Image 1: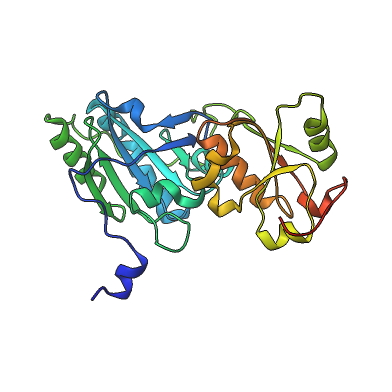
Image 2 (image 1 turned 45 degrees about the vertical axis):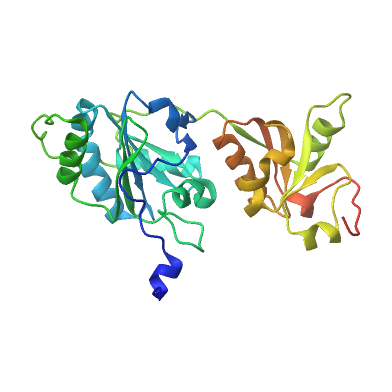
Length: 291
């Protein structure tokens, strides 16, 4: 009979199994797609449960050896559910060269069993994916960095260069740190009047998507909304939108719609807008009743 832990936490994927799809936005706005690395590079994915100081200390150790991973044809990425602006700020504060990927709703983490079965958040876990697209290692926790290098070396079939000098911890705001520049404004915030202007233009390509619960929508909604998909169902139902460009998201206050917009950009969508203030501040006509 499975234990309580088994019921709320998956076992890591077995070595040799095909890697699940991954298509996420990096903290600098770059769209990272796992298939692009197949036959060219190994990939080390590090799922971070939190962005606290113990995690920062371990991440600095990893970053200090990044050149050794690169010498073994291995790209390194961190993954977390925080939004891209928070990831970018944390990476610059900690002083990391490797990029962090935004995983909305921990969907990528779930695919690699690096999350709980219930809560939509990452757990500390490392995954090594080979050039052949198969999982070579999937292990809980944040292991010794030197051991990770040895494992990647075994996958690549050649030794890594000798260890580099110990990491020098940079102070916050050190201007010598490499930063990729400001992230492109992939998601744009608009108020309800600006949203209505986009939606009501002649031959407008924009659609309004309400990501609240059914009960909220039936109490009051905009008559301009064409789709009603609760935010936690969007990763499974976004194909129902029929388009991945020119989308305006709205919720009750602007938080859930922001998460929905970030998710869509993480899978490559463009011209995505979030209505700040949501239906609470909606200035246009409202209707109510069953959908």
